[in-house]
Amino acid sequence: LAKTTQPISMDSYEGQEVNITCSHNNIATNDYITWYQQFPSQGPRFIIQGYKTKVTNEVASLFIPADRKSSTLSLPRVSLSDTAVYYCLVGAPNILTGGGNKLTFGTGTQLKVEL
Amino acid sequence: GAVVSQHPSWVICKSGTSVKIECRSLDFQATTMFWYRQFPKQSLMLMATSNEGSKATYEQGVEKDKFLINHASLTLSTLTVTSAHPEDSSFYICSVPLGSYNSPLHFGNGTRLTVT
Image (cartoon, rainbow over all chains, first blue to last red; front, side, top):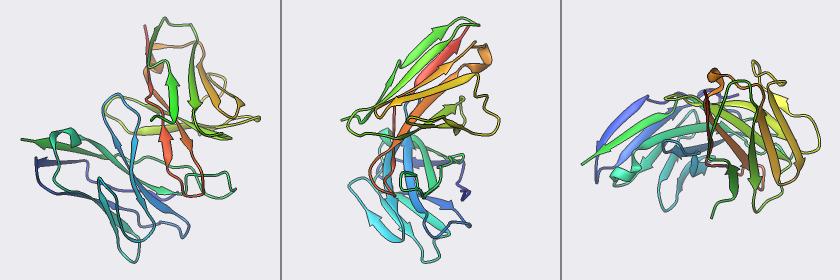
C-alpha cells in the first residue's frame, strides 16, 4: 500500500489560495490519487481524484507531476467553511474487479481558515 | 443526496452491552463495504472489509469476535460491537466503493459510540 505524507496543519485566511502537497513515493502504476475532506463528527467527503497531470472540478484542482510521486490539492479562495481535515489517499478503492487495494488514511492536514 | 446512510448517528451504552451499527448503500448494490474507526484528533483506521455473502476480512489487531460484521444483502452491512467497554468509545464510519475500478469511496456520516 502506498504510504502518504502530508503536512500536519496549515493556516490561511479567507480569499487566499491554499495548496496542500502530499508525497507518495511508492505509488503503484494502477493507483489513483484521491482527496477527501472531513469536518468534525462527519464522514469524509470526496473532493477530487486524478491519475496524472491536472484535474479540476468546481471546488478544487489537483496537480500531479509526471513521476506521480506527489500531488498538490489546490483550493481557490478559501472561506471559513473550508476549515477541515484534508486527506490524500493513494490506491484503487474498488476491489470489485479483483484488482485494487484497500485505501489507508494517513494523518491528514488540518486546514484552519481565519478571517 | 446521500448515497450511504449510517445509523444511528450516535449511541450511548453501558459496559458489557452490545451495539449494532447499520450501513446502507442507498443507490448502489455493494458487494463490499469498509468499516473504519476514528479516535479523537486521529485519522481513520480501517477495521475490516465487509463482503456480501461471505466472511468479513479483518485488519491486523482487530478482534473479529468483538466486532461482528454481517453483510447479508447488497445494500446493508452491520457492525456489532459486542461486550462494549469504555475503550471502544469512538467514531465508527462505513464506506462504500461505487461503480468502476477507480471510483472514489462514499462515506456514511459516522456513528459516535460512547460506552459508560
